[in-house]
Length: 635
Image 1: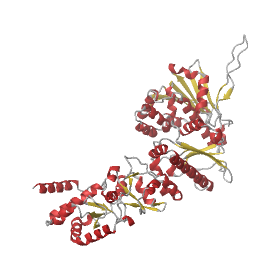
Image 2: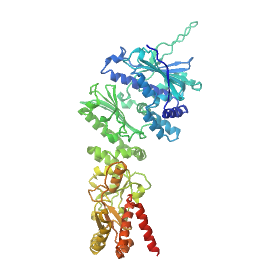
Image 3: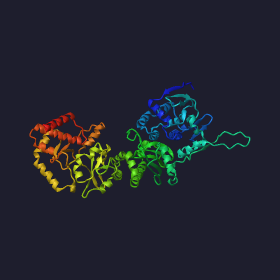
Image 4: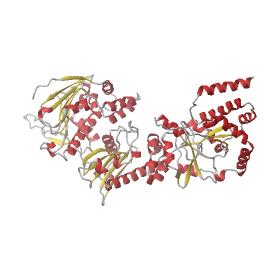
């Protein structure tokens, strides 16, 4: 092999920042380093097994996959090695040298300063390898990718203080070896029993055998002690999802979840099932306690892990779970799919459709049980994942009623900003003769609560849902009824309260419309194309005016949301409804100067637009008109 010089590279700035956090005990539990490195080794073994399905030569004559943990007390080192897929020099540079910098940057942006919470984030961002620096002041990694020549091995080394070295070396065996040179104050991890207990605690369910040297028999009197030479398996090495769920403890589920899903918190709940018959498979699905940092990243794939007959096939098999349940983690292991199954095949496989449908049913059932039996726990779930679940009715029409029962909202009767009212609770509290579920959309909860559209509803004590999340507009455009009750926006179309509306009030509006035709025409002339129509309001009791749109028009709030997202969404031309009982309308009606009338009409329109959370086209003009009006009043 030609000599290749040792090259030194500086870590990127964001990588150095992560290293600084890690080496300053970001992890509150130091023993986590072994869990992370064993988990990485398991992933490497699984990747080899998968790639070897189409290229058996990658096994290089040895298909028995193992992970080994060894201690050298004299040298003060712990070594974790595997005979998995290994890495090429380019892969070492891309994955070890940069720590997937885009994820690292998001990790740094997510930090709160709370070490306990921040330590729970690190495993989600692909930086688990650097947990080695919690206990080591120097880390040496030697690797060779399966299928490459022996002279294409790579050695990477760093003290974690800003730079690393990389060079080519001879390495006969495929796979990766990581040597941790322990700090003086971390020598406790040289204890064989200590390491075995950590592996048993965190990595019992790794499907690849994790081995350590078996302690030799004590020497006979007068004989020299013999070094350990026999390897023995330390973990159980049985896929937990294949065990009978009655034999699995809650603690085992928790540890499996944390290890498999790179989380540091226990899951909220889980479902473990074995299905037999024409389509045989096992599934173990978890609902996390906290939303992942990339849940709203459109380019990020989500989904559960897919195995076929205990062989790992792919991460993030998105065809096994709909997008609105992308927060669900876990594994599905099929007995019936081909081992060489690909994402393209998954798209057209009826067995996958069957598994997906069953997965959805189980997850929704889990959430229904949680909502029914533990409202506090469900509120925690809703705070993390409610906005994702709101995508469900548009994506999954067949389950829209089930999803509807899981939705939670703030309402005009709820306190604070908590979304804790279900549609079933709303229906139970509906006033006599109420036929519809009323809602309002707005940018903020304050804007929704104080909207003039709610005045008549407050007067009649009719509860209204307050929808203030961006996704709510998407939700109500696809979720139009629940248990026979139509969802009706209070800001669309003419107000129709059905039997809740007094005949006397109806006749009053009709009479006022006829008597004030001239005022209505003057307002329309003054506002011109800014409004589609002017009409007398039956919604208002305190405000002079409000803006509404037609039944089938895009709402003003949706248009604003789309504009904020950079989409070309023209604002709908609104209808202005005026309150003829308001003193300002009486003042306008008495105004004989058409210029002043026009200014008053424009002020009323701008006020109504602001009350909607809208943005004025001419804020300076609004201020000038308001100032002139105030000066006129004082003179």
